[in-house]
Amino acid sequence: MAELYGRMIEPEMKAIQRGNSEEDGSPGYRLMKEAEPRAAELRFREYVLRHEEQIVHVLESSGRAEQRAMAADALGYAQPRQTAALVRAARDPDSGVRNNATRALGEILRADPSAAAQIAPEAFIELVRSGTWSDRNKGCLTLWPLTQSRDPQLLARIKSEAGDALWEIARWRNVGWAFCARVVLGRAAGIPEDRLNALASGPLDAFVAATRR
Image 1 (tube, one colour):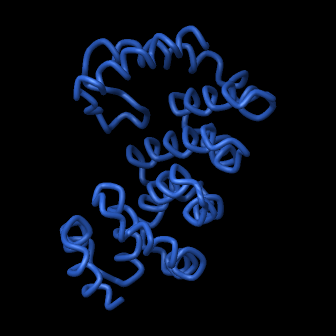
Image 2 (tube, one colour):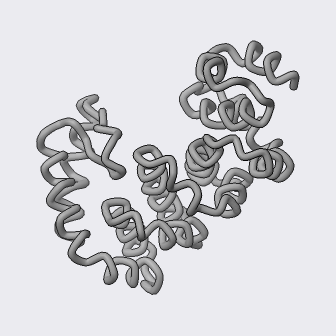
C-alpha cells in the first residue's frame, strides 16, 4: 500500500504545483481531473477496496503516526461503511491522521449528504476549538455538510459549544478558509440557504450584519 500511495501522491503534488488541482467532486473520494494523478488514484482505490479491513486495523492499531495517516487517507477510497473508523480517527493523537480522516469524511459527505445521519458531531466540535490550524480548518469543513439539514438541536449545540471558535474562523482574512464557518453560523442564525452562499463569500461586515452579531 505504501508503494501505491507514493505513486499516487507524487503526481497529485506535481499537478497541484502546476495549478491543476481541480477535482471531480462527485464520487465520494478524492479524484483529480488531470489524467496522471486520476489514474494513480483509481489504481490506489482498487487496492483499498480489496484490503479494507487490514487498512482499518492499521489505522486503529499502528504505533507509527505516518502509517495511521496513510491508512486514514486510504479509507477515504473505501466503502462508506468505513465511515465509523474515520470518525474515530478524527480523535487520533497525531494531527496528520486527524487531517486525513476529516478530509476523507468531507469527500464522503460532499457526494452523499445523507451520510451525515451516521456521523456524530462531537469530534468535529472539538476540532474547531483546537489550537491546531488543520484541526480547525478540517473540523469546520466537516460541520459544514453536517449542518446542511439545519437540525435545530445540532445547530444550537454547535453555537453553544463552538460559536466563539467559529466566529474566529469566520473572521479569517482568507475567505475560502472562512467560508465554512460562516455557512454554519449563518444556518444557526436562520439565514435562508438561497442567500447564505453569497453572504458567506462576501464582505465580512455584510455577513456580520445579516447574522445580527
